[in-house]
Image (cartoon, rainbow, N blue to C red; front, side):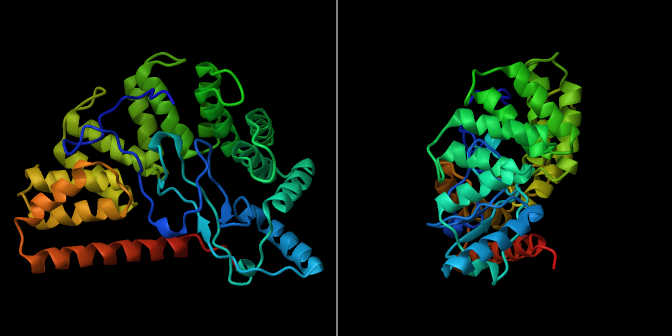
Length: 356
């Protein structure tokens, strides 16, 4: 897609843009919905798609359907897609999702793609906005039906008209990239704006890029920074990372402030943002605002790699810093990084448990 906001949030480790914000569950990933908002629980092989805790009742309908047919199969892979930018590649196209983790009882039930599609059609026709959103994704990806971008846009539009912020966001992406319709920056802007008004931090993040570049609106860098701040406050890790880059470089009308940049990168890294983890490593490598620290440098490089950060120079940078350390120090740091990731995963799983 068009990179409306050509910021420089990669510090000097690499000239290339971050390809994947984070993916802390690579062994569980089946596929991601790009560039549309992923808000579903997914099942490897056979597939069940349900949107948010508001659609848990659909899981019960699947259980009832399977019980009638005496169908029972083990769910081999369930993933909840959250705002960990798994994020997901490319970073500017992917947004956080709010999905519950299925209970052990729910994990024993599965439905194939065609059945899931039929169920979504039935629920969408009854006015279920979440089903409309899911149906749009199924058409976009060709799940249970032939791939049809025009139909995908139609159902995303219906979800938006039913009041879903995610629906407006997805319609905005369709107009931004020209999926199922001709590209139209003005319509993209309007839909992102509506999603932001409804509280979607991804919409705020998208709008910032439009204001920074004057796309479909007057250029207004201070307002773009304000929107990034609102997205960051709402939990958007990439917005935090980008605010760090703005403070680091002193761009978009902001004063250069290394300590503020370090704070933003730290907050983003603690949310699992691989780009920010790499940026912290650069701070410790170059002694920016603090003494150079090869132990901390290696720690954040290792975490960035475990989090899914992809850039060719990363391995070389890690090998270089390892040369400054003893094998025992390297082993200790790598063990600490693994423990950090495991603790992060556990916290993420706990925060996505559905209400009892």
